[in-house]
Amino acid sequence: MRWPHGAEPERSIVHARNELVISAPRERVWRWLVRAARWPEWYGNCGWIRFRNGSGPDLTPGTEFVWKTFGVRVKSRVVVFDPMRELGWDASAFGLTAYHGWELETLPDGTTRVVTEETQRGPLTALGRWYLRRGLLREHQHWLEGLARMAATGDPA
Image 1 (cartoon, one colour):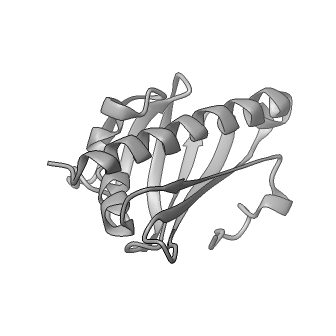
Image 2 (image 1 turned 90 degrees about the horizontal axis):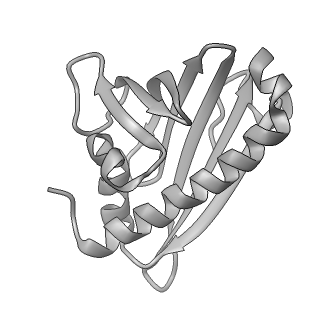
């Protein structure tokens, strides 16, 4: 994971890591992951998403978006974009800053290993560190499972 300076796990209050092997080619998994406009359809922890700089429906380098996740309005910007390999965005909300990254790897059998990690810092993160980490692990697992379901259906429209 290419962590932005200051967002590294060892410099963060909360760090969550999830991994899943998805029975679909990496290219298809990537297309579903970057089609952020459709996250609310299959990721229950994304209430809505709005693109701020005229982009969308897909994430691209520098895409800015506002979305509702964990019941909170969050501002994000794509800061890592290595097609089919790595995607990452920063995030800010009242009392916290975060970084969320994804890595995709094709395995010898043609499946795709997907790792997603998030780090958080800030006063609210410090107060709720144990609750936040458990919630991140649970919801990111759901996100991975939803991504796997969608990748199994084919490419996004």
